[in-house]
Length: 73
Image (cartoon, rainbow, N blue to C red; front, side):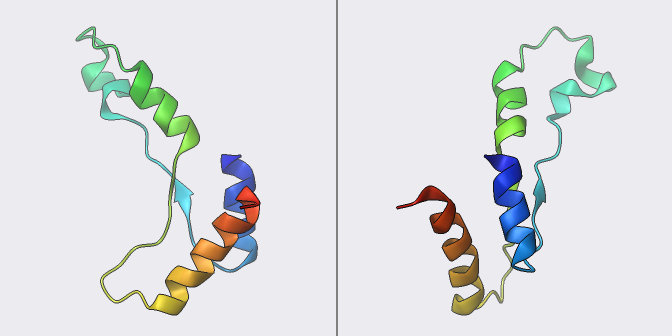
């Protein structure tokens, strides 16, 4: 679903990207034994959509329409 959403957002000339890897998966933290299953699962499902201080209602509507269109709500 995430890849399909990214493709549809990109097709509408909206910039989105995948979520960065959780810090617990980086070499610096790997040896502490932390269980980061949830963080890794979120990384595989989540995307970052545009958000900025002067985002217009029209910009928000464009993004919302792409997402709603995929959900068949």
